[in-house]
Length: 389
Image: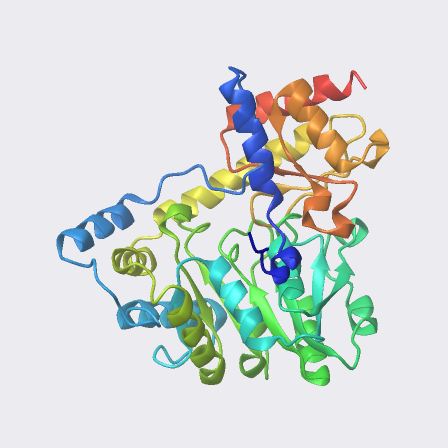
Protein backbone atom coordinates (compact mmCIF):
# COMPACT_ATOMS: atom_id res chain seq x y z
CA UNK A 1 0.00 0.00 0.00
CA UNK A 2 1.30 3.47 -0.87
CA UNK A 3 2.15 5.83 1.97
CA UNK A 4 0.40 8.92 3.26
CA UNK A 5 0.99 12.55 2.34
CA UNK A 6 4.16 13.80 4.03
CA UNK A 7 2.67 17.17 4.92
CA UNK A 8 0.35 15.40 7.38
CA UNK A 9 3.41 14.87 9.59
CA UNK A 10 3.51 18.65 10.14
CA UNK A 11 -0.07 18.80 11.37
CA UNK A 12 -0.56 18.52 15.13
CA UNK A 13 -3.60 17.78 17.25
CA UNK A 14 -5.32 19.15 20.34
CA UNK A 15 -4.29 17.80 23.72
CA UNK A 16 -7.66 18.30 25.40
CA UNK A 17 -9.23 15.62 23.26
CA UNK A 18 -6.39 13.20 23.98
CA UNK A 19 -6.91 13.64 27.73
CA UNK A 20 -10.67 13.32 27.26
CA UNK A 21 -10.20 9.93 25.61
CA UNK A 22 -8.05 8.74 28.52
CA UNK A 23 -10.68 9.97 30.97
CA UNK A 24 -13.44 8.21 29.04
CA UNK A 25 -11.48 4.96 29.28
CA UNK A 26 -11.40 5.32 33.08
CA UNK A 27 -15.14 5.94 33.06
CA UNK A 28 -15.70 2.80 31.01
CA UNK A 29 -13.92 0.94 33.82
CA UNK A 30 -16.47 2.31 36.27
CA UNK A 31 -14.51 5.24 37.74
CA UNK A 32 -16.06 8.66 38.33
CA UNK A 33 -13.88 11.28 36.67
CA UNK A 34 -14.11 15.03 37.32
CA UNK A 35 -13.66 16.74 33.94
CA UNK A 36 -11.66 19.97 34.15
CA UNK A 37 -9.86 19.49 30.82
CA UNK A 38 -12.36 20.44 28.11
CA UNK A 39 -13.01 24.06 27.23
CA UNK A 40 -16.72 23.70 26.63
CA UNK A 41 -19.52 25.62 28.36
CA UNK A 42 -21.65 23.35 30.51
CA UNK A 43 -24.71 25.52 29.92
CA UNK A 44 -27.37 24.63 27.38
CA UNK A 45 -27.79 26.80 24.29
CA UNK A 46 -30.24 29.62 25.14
CA UNK A 47 -33.84 28.55 24.63
CA UNK A 48 -34.69 31.27 22.09
CA UNK A 49 -31.74 30.19 19.95
CA UNK A 50 -32.77 26.53 20.04
CA UNK A 51 -36.34 27.46 19.14
CA UNK A 52 -35.10 29.51 16.19
CA UNK A 53 -33.11 26.51 14.96
CA UNK A 54 -36.14 24.23 15.24
CA UNK A 55 -38.33 26.71 13.35
CA UNK A 56 -35.68 26.99 10.66
CA UNK A 57 -35.77 23.23 10.09
CA UNK A 58 -39.56 23.26 9.90
CA UNK A 59 -39.43 26.18 7.47
CA UNK A 60 -37.11 24.35 5.10
CA UNK A 61 -33.72 25.82 5.92
CA UNK A 62 -32.08 22.55 4.93
CA UNK A 63 -30.39 23.52 1.65
CA UNK A 64 -27.25 25.29 0.46
CA UNK A 65 -26.78 28.94 1.31
CA UNK A 66 -24.36 31.47 -0.15
CA UNK A 67 -20.78 30.28 0.45
CA UNK A 68 -20.24 33.48 2.46
CA UNK A 69 -23.26 32.77 4.65
CA UNK A 70 -26.83 34.06 4.79
CA UNK A 71 -26.83 37.80 4.17
CA UNK A 72 -29.10 38.50 7.15
CA UNK A 73 -26.61 36.76 9.44
CA UNK A 74 -23.71 38.70 7.94
CA UNK A 75 -25.69 41.90 8.54
CA UNK A 76 -26.26 40.90 12.17
CA UNK A 77 -22.54 40.18 12.56
CA UNK A 78 -21.64 43.56 11.02
CA UNK A 79 -24.03 45.26 13.45
CA UNK A 80 -22.46 43.42 16.41
CA UNK A 81 -18.95 44.44 15.29
CA UNK A 82 -20.04 48.07 15.00
CA UNK A 83 -21.63 47.95 18.48
CA UNK A 84 -18.73 46.18 20.24
CA UNK A 85 -15.65 47.31 18.28
CA UNK A 86 -16.82 50.68 16.90
CA UNK A 87 -15.93 49.72 13.34
CA UNK A 88 -18.12 49.82 10.24
CA UNK A 89 -18.13 46.52 8.33
CA UNK A 90 -19.61 45.82 4.89
CA UNK A 91 -21.71 42.64 5.38
CA UNK A 92 -21.57 41.84 1.68
CA UNK A 93 -17.81 42.11 1.18
CA UNK A 94 -16.10 41.92 4.58
CA UNK A 95 -17.80 39.04 6.42
CA UNK A 96 -17.65 35.30 5.84
CA UNK A 97 -19.42 32.69 7.98
CA UNK A 98 -17.85 29.23 8.42
CA UNK A 99 -18.72 26.04 10.34
CA UNK A 100 -16.82 27.08 13.47
CA UNK A 101 -14.10 29.56 14.39
CA UNK A 102 -11.46 26.86 13.91
CA UNK A 103 -12.05 26.64 10.11
CA UNK A 104 -11.71 30.43 10.07
CA UNK A 105 -8.28 30.10 11.71
CA UNK A 106 -7.23 27.37 9.28
CA UNK A 107 -8.45 29.26 6.22
CA UNK A 108 -6.93 32.56 7.36
CA UNK A 109 -3.47 31.02 7.65
CA UNK A 110 -3.86 29.29 4.28
CA UNK A 111 -4.93 32.57 2.70
CA UNK A 112 -2.10 34.70 4.09
CA UNK A 113 0.97 32.59 4.79
CA UNK A 114 3.50 31.18 2.31
CA UNK A 115 6.19 28.56 2.93
CA UNK A 116 9.19 30.25 4.51
CA UNK A 117 7.21 33.06 6.12
CA UNK A 118 7.57 33.62 9.84
CA UNK A 119 4.49 33.98 12.04
CA UNK A 120 4.61 35.38 15.58
CA UNK A 121 2.58 33.21 17.98
CA UNK A 122 2.09 33.70 21.73
CA UNK A 123 3.13 30.70 23.82
CA UNK A 124 1.38 29.17 25.66
CA UNK A 125 -1.35 29.44 23.07
CA UNK A 126 -4.12 27.55 21.35
CA UNK A 127 -2.21 24.67 19.69
CA UNK A 128 -3.96 24.96 16.32
CA UNK A 129 -2.07 28.19 15.50
CA UNK A 130 1.36 26.61 15.61
CA UNK A 131 0.09 23.41 14.02
CA UNK A 132 -1.37 25.07 10.93
CA UNK A 133 1.57 27.46 10.51
CA UNK A 134 3.88 24.44 10.37
CA UNK A 135 1.44 22.65 8.06
CA UNK A 136 1.74 25.36 5.39
CA UNK A 137 5.54 25.22 5.57
CA UNK A 138 6.00 28.45 7.51
CA UNK A 139 7.98 29.02 10.71
CA UNK A 140 6.27 29.69 14.06
CA UNK A 141 8.18 32.24 16.13
CA UNK A 142 7.07 31.89 19.74
CA UNK A 143 6.55 34.89 22.02
CA UNK A 144 6.65 33.75 25.67
CA UNK A 145 3.68 34.80 27.78
CA UNK A 146 5.12 35.32 31.25
CA UNK A 147 3.36 34.78 34.55
CA UNK A 148 4.94 37.93 36.04
CA UNK A 149 3.16 39.95 33.30
CA UNK A 150 -0.11 38.10 33.97
CA UNK A 151 0.45 36.34 30.61
CA UNK A 152 0.08 39.55 28.57
CA UNK A 153 2.32 39.97 25.54
CA UNK A 154 5.77 41.37 26.26
CA UNK A 155 5.78 44.08 23.59
CA UNK A 156 9.54 44.68 23.67
CA UNK A 157 10.19 40.99 23.13
CA UNK A 158 7.58 40.99 20.38
CA UNK A 159 9.46 43.74 18.53
CA UNK A 160 12.78 41.94 18.97
CA UNK A 161 11.38 38.81 17.29
CA UNK A 162 10.29 40.62 14.11
CA UNK A 163 12.57 39.89 11.16
CA UNK A 164 12.64 40.32 7.40
CA UNK A 165 10.52 37.17 6.91
CA UNK A 166 7.89 38.04 9.53
CA UNK A 167 4.50 38.28 7.86
CA UNK A 168 1.87 37.96 10.58
CA UNK A 169 1.08 38.00 14.28
CA UNK A 170 -1.58 35.75 15.79
CA UNK A 171 -3.16 36.90 19.05
CA UNK A 172 -5.91 35.44 21.24
CA UNK A 173 -7.34 37.54 24.05
CA UNK A 174 -8.98 36.77 26.38
CA UNK A 175 -6.46 34.00 26.16
CA UNK A 176 -6.72 30.25 26.03
CA UNK A 177 -5.14 28.69 28.15
CA UNK A 178 -4.20 31.45 30.61
CA UNK A 179 -7.39 33.54 30.88
CA UNK A 180 -5.27 36.68 30.43
CA UNK A 181 -6.57 39.86 28.82
CA UNK A 182 -4.78 42.81 27.25
CA UNK A 183 -4.90 46.37 28.54
CA UNK A 184 -5.97 49.23 26.26
CA UNK A 185 -2.32 50.32 26.20
CA UNK A 186 -1.26 46.83 25.07
CA UNK A 187 -3.76 46.90 22.20
CA UNK A 188 -2.64 50.34 21.04
CA UNK A 189 1.00 49.23 21.12
CA UNK A 190 0.25 46.05 19.14
CA UNK A 191 -1.48 48.17 16.50
CA UNK A 192 1.50 50.51 16.29
CA UNK A 193 3.90 47.58 15.91
CA UNK A 194 1.75 45.98 13.21
CA UNK A 195 1.49 49.23 11.28
CA UNK A 196 5.18 50.08 11.64
CA UNK A 197 6.32 46.63 10.48
CA UNK A 198 3.59 45.98 7.90
CA UNK A 199 2.29 42.86 9.63
CA UNK A 200 -0.98 41.01 9.20
CA UNK A 201 -2.74 40.40 12.52
CA UNK A 202 -5.03 37.40 13.01
CA UNK A 203 -7.02 38.14 16.17
CA UNK A 204 -8.93 35.20 17.64
CA UNK A 205 -11.63 36.88 19.74
CA UNK A 206 -13.79 33.86 20.52
CA UNK A 207 -13.81 34.75 24.27
CA UNK A 208 -14.43 38.48 23.78
CA UNK A 209 -17.80 38.38 25.59
CA UNK A 210 -16.44 36.44 28.58
CA UNK A 211 -14.54 39.16 30.45
CA UNK A 212 -14.58 39.80 34.21
CA UNK A 213 -12.06 42.51 35.05
CA UNK A 214 -11.87 45.48 32.73
CA UNK A 215 -13.38 45.56 29.26
CA UNK A 216 -12.42 44.00 25.98
CA UNK A 217 -10.74 46.00 23.23
CA UNK A 218 -9.98 44.62 19.78
CA UNK A 219 -7.02 45.79 17.69
CA UNK A 220 -9.46 46.31 14.81
CA UNK A 221 -10.65 49.44 16.66
CA UNK A 222 -7.21 51.05 16.27
CA UNK A 223 -6.24 53.29 13.30
CA UNK A 224 -5.00 51.41 10.25
CA UNK A 225 -5.82 47.96 11.62
CA UNK A 226 -8.97 47.08 9.72
CA UNK A 227 -6.90 46.98 6.53
CA UNK A 228 -4.34 44.52 7.93
CA UNK A 229 -6.38 42.27 10.16
CA UNK A 230 -8.55 39.18 10.23
CA UNK A 231 -10.91 39.21 13.20
CA UNK A 232 -12.21 35.75 14.11
CA UNK A 233 -15.15 35.13 16.42
CA UNK A 234 -18.03 32.69 16.74
CA UNK A 235 -20.93 31.34 18.72
CA UNK A 236 -19.48 28.33 20.56
CA UNK A 237 -18.33 30.01 23.77
CA UNK A 238 -20.57 33.06 24.13
CA UNK A 239 -23.82 31.22 23.34
CA UNK A 240 -22.82 27.72 24.44
CA UNK A 241 -23.19 26.50 20.85
CA UNK A 242 -20.11 24.27 20.49
CA UNK A 243 -22.07 21.54 18.71
CA UNK A 244 -23.74 23.95 16.29
CA UNK A 245 -20.37 24.64 14.61
CA UNK A 246 -20.54 28.27 13.52
CA UNK A 247 -17.94 31.04 13.40
CA UNK A 248 -17.06 34.02 11.28
CA UNK A 249 -14.18 36.12 10.01
CA UNK A 250 -14.03 39.87 9.34
CA UNK A 251 -11.41 41.26 6.98
CA UNK A 252 -10.81 43.21 3.78
CA UNK A 253 -12.76 42.29 0.62
CA UNK A 254 -9.58 40.82 -0.87
CA UNK A 255 -9.02 38.51 2.11
CA UNK A 256 -12.70 37.57 2.42
CA UNK A 257 -12.82 36.62 -1.27
CA UNK A 258 -9.99 34.16 -0.63
CA UNK A 259 -11.64 32.78 2.49
CA UNK A 260 -14.84 32.22 0.53
CA UNK A 261 -12.86 30.42 -2.19
CA UNK A 262 -11.36 28.14 0.45
CA UNK A 263 -14.80 27.54 1.94
CA UNK A 264 -16.18 26.52 -1.46
CA UNK A 265 -13.42 23.95 -1.74
CA UNK A 266 -13.81 22.64 1.83
CA UNK A 267 -17.45 22.78 2.94
CA UNK A 268 -19.47 24.73 0.31
CA UNK A 269 -21.25 26.66 3.11
CA UNK A 270 -22.24 26.38 6.77
CA UNK A 271 -25.46 24.53 7.65
CA UNK A 272 -28.45 26.73 6.87
CA UNK A 273 -30.54 26.16 10.01
CA UNK A 274 -27.59 26.90 12.33
CA UNK A 275 -27.16 30.26 10.61
CA UNK A 276 -30.80 31.12 11.21
CA UNK A 277 -30.34 30.23 14.89
CA UNK A 278 -27.24 32.45 14.99
CA UNK A 279 -29.26 35.43 13.77
CA UNK A 280 -31.51 34.97 16.81
CA UNK A 281 -28.44 34.63 19.04
CA UNK A 282 -27.16 38.02 17.93
CA UNK A 283 -30.49 39.84 17.58
CA UNK A 284 -32.37 38.28 20.49
CA UNK A 285 -32.19 38.83 24.27
CA UNK A 286 -28.73 38.60 25.83
CA UNK A 287 -29.91 37.91 29.39
CA UNK A 288 -28.75 34.29 29.44
CA UNK A 289 -25.31 35.26 28.12
CA UNK A 290 -24.86 37.83 30.88
CA UNK A 291 -25.94 35.29 33.49
CA UNK A 292 -23.44 32.76 32.14
CA UNK A 293 -20.64 35.30 32.55
CA UNK A 294 -21.73 36.12 36.10
CA UNK A 295 -21.71 32.40 36.90
CA UNK A 296 -18.25 31.95 35.37
CA UNK A 297 -16.97 34.81 37.53
CA UNK A 298 -18.21 33.09 40.70
CA UNK A 299 -16.68 29.81 39.59
CA UNK A 300 -13.39 31.54 38.74
CA UNK A 301 -13.17 33.07 42.20
CA UNK A 302 -13.88 29.70 43.82
CA UNK A 303 -11.39 27.73 41.70
CA UNK A 304 -8.54 30.23 42.05
CA UNK A 305 -8.97 30.52 45.82
CA UNK A 306 -9.08 26.72 46.20
CA UNK A 307 -6.04 26.18 43.95
CA UNK A 308 -4.00 28.82 45.76
CA UNK A 309 -4.70 27.00 49.04
CA UNK A 310 -2.81 23.94 47.77
CA UNK A 311 0.91 23.97 48.65
CA UNK A 312 2.87 23.97 45.37
CA UNK A 313 0.14 25.63 43.32
CA UNK A 314 0.30 29.32 42.36
CA UNK A 315 -2.51 30.71 40.20
CA UNK A 316 -2.82 34.17 38.64
CA UNK A 317 -6.42 35.40 38.64
CA UNK A 318 -7.71 35.12 35.04
CA UNK A 319 -9.35 38.20 33.53
CA UNK A 320 -11.52 36.36 31.00
CA UNK A 321 -12.40 33.07 29.26
CA UNK A 322 -13.04 30.16 31.65
CA UNK A 323 -9.61 28.71 32.42
CA UNK A 324 -7.26 28.75 35.39
CA UNK A 325 -3.56 28.24 34.60
CA UNK A 326 -1.71 27.48 37.83
CA UNK A 327 2.06 27.23 38.13
CA UNK A 328 2.98 23.72 39.36
CA UNK A 329 6.75 23.80 38.92
CA UNK A 330 7.41 23.16 42.62
CA UNK A 331 6.42 19.50 42.23
CA UNK A 332 9.53 18.71 40.18
CA UNK A 333 7.50 16.84 37.56
CA UNK A 334 6.74 17.70 33.98
CA UNK A 335 3.26 19.07 33.46
CA UNK A 336 2.37 15.94 31.50
CA UNK A 337 3.56 13.70 34.34
CA UNK A 338 1.50 15.66 36.83
CA UNK A 339 -1.56 15.60 34.55
CA UNK A 340 -1.28 11.82 34.21
CA UNK A 341 -0.72 11.39 37.95
CA UNK A 342 -3.84 13.41 38.80
CA UNK A 343 -5.89 11.48 36.27
CA UNK A 344 -4.78 8.07 37.52
CA UNK A 345 -4.52 8.86 41.26
CA UNK A 346 -7.35 11.36 41.75
CA UNK A 347 -9.47 10.69 38.67
CA UNK A 348 -9.40 14.40 37.84
CA UNK A 349 -8.85 15.29 34.19
CA UNK A 350 -6.71 18.41 33.72
CA UNK A 351 -4.60 19.50 30.79
CA UNK A 352 -0.81 19.72 30.81
CA UNK A 353 0.47 23.18 29.98
CA UNK A 354 2.93 22.02 27.32
CA UNK A 355 -0.08 20.94 25.23
CA UNK A 356 -0.21 24.69 24.50
CA UNK A 357 3.37 24.96 23.36
CA UNK A 358 6.89 25.19 24.70
CA UNK A 359 6.26 27.95 27.23
CA UNK A 360 3.29 26.21 28.77
CA UNK A 361 5.56 23.72 30.52
CA UNK A 362 5.30 23.91 34.28
CA UNK A 363 1.59 24.76 34.29
CA UNK A 364 -1.76 23.00 34.19
CA UNK A 365 -4.93 24.26 32.54
CA UNK A 366 -8.17 23.68 34.41
CA UNK A 367 -11.54 24.67 32.98
CA UNK A 368 -14.17 26.09 35.32
CA UNK A 369 -16.90 25.69 32.70
CA UNK A 370 -18.39 23.13 35.04
CA UNK A 371 -20.49 23.09 38.20
CA UNK A 372 -19.45 24.45 41.59
CA UNK A 373 -19.79 20.91 42.95
CA UNK A 374 -17.35 19.57 40.36
CA UNK A 375 -14.89 22.38 41.03
CA UNK A 376 -14.96 21.80 44.79
CA UNK A 377 -14.67 18.03 44.51
CA UNK A 378 -12.08 18.16 41.74
CA UNK A 379 -9.75 20.57 43.54
CA UNK A 380 -10.20 18.67 46.82
CA UNK A 381 -9.14 15.46 45.04
CA UNK A 382 -6.14 17.26 43.55
CA UNK A 383 -5.08 18.56 46.97
CA UNK A 384 -5.29 15.11 48.50
CA UNK A 385 -3.36 13.54 45.61
CA UNK A 386 -0.48 16.03 45.63
CA UNK A 387 -0.19 15.79 49.41
CA UNK A 388 0.85 12.17 48.79
CA UNK A 389 3.77 13.14 46.56
